[in-house]
Structure formats: structure tokens, C-alpha cells
Image (cartoon, rainbow, N blue to C red; front, side, top):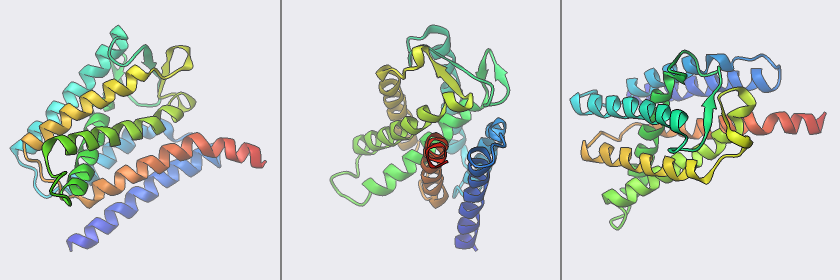
Length: 221
């Protein structure tokens, strides 16, 4: 039953984000205001496929969620963490001008990146150590952020001062993602979740599509 559950979950997530992507880019029906709901649904599907929800996993999830939100708050308020930016209105309800789902976004991205890093590094005796895993997980998060940054201002997610993403943003992302992955490893979170790997790939395709498809369609037209 478990393989069937995995396949159904992956197909469901593919359809969910395909509908949002196609409706937005091809039919100009703005469903991006449901982005927060999409993250909540993704979290439910991902964690429904997590092997065991135990106290260590709950602790990891709460720490990353809370600190992820606090980092975003500090980033917007001070401009010294990621650079100077502010959030738009397509990420749902805000507290102190920070969308609540930002904490969930940090959690999902770190969780999925950590699982991929664990799966890849565990195949090698040389890489099956905490540092290579944390380094790879942080790199994967920064890679996804590169795609997210291209789509963010186009769809009212967030905006950077002077419309330029500072290198500071990527270095901060890497540092905090590294730390969160270290926590993932120290708490020995179970990394057996194929749906998490699929979700990461879906996010790459989704954000690449959001940023590239409108231009491609305009040039084609």
C-alpha cells in the first residue's frame, strides 16, 4: 500500500502545481493568491508520507518554522540579514508584515533538501558525513531560491530594493540552511520520504515555469 500512497501523493502534487502554473501563465487566471494554501496542502502530503512523526521530528519542525519566520522578520525590519526587501500580498495572512507561511516554507524547503542530501551522500563512504550532507542541502536550498527569486516580484511574493537580489541573500540562505540541516542530522530525522524528493523537483519546475513561460509565450505570440 505504501508504494501506491507515494505514487498517488506525487501525482497529486504534480497536478496541484500544474493547475496553478497553467492557469496563471496560459489562461491568466491568478491562483497565486492561494500560494499559502498550496504550501499547507504540500505540508500535509509531505508529512503524511513521513515514516514516523515522533518528538524529535516535532522539535525539528517547530524550531525551523519559528526561526525561519523570525529570520524573515529580522530581514525585513533591519535589512542586514538578507538585504532590503519586503513582502507582497500573494503569500497569505501576515503578522508584523511577514506572511505566516514563510516559516512553513523554510521548513518544507529544508526538510526536502535535507532528505535529498542524505540520500545522495549516503551512497558514498567519503560523503556520508555531517558536513557534506549539510553543505549539499544548503546548496540545494540556494539553487531553489535562485528560481524563486526570478518569479517573486512578477507574482507579488516579495520585492528587493532596486529590483536587484543581493549576493547577501544567497550567502544568508546558505548559512541558515546549513544550520537547519545540521539540526536535521543531530536529531536523526528519518530521511525516507520519496515524496519530499519529488516536491523539490516540482518546485524547481514550478518556479522556472512561472518566470520563463510568460516571456516564451509573449515571444511566440
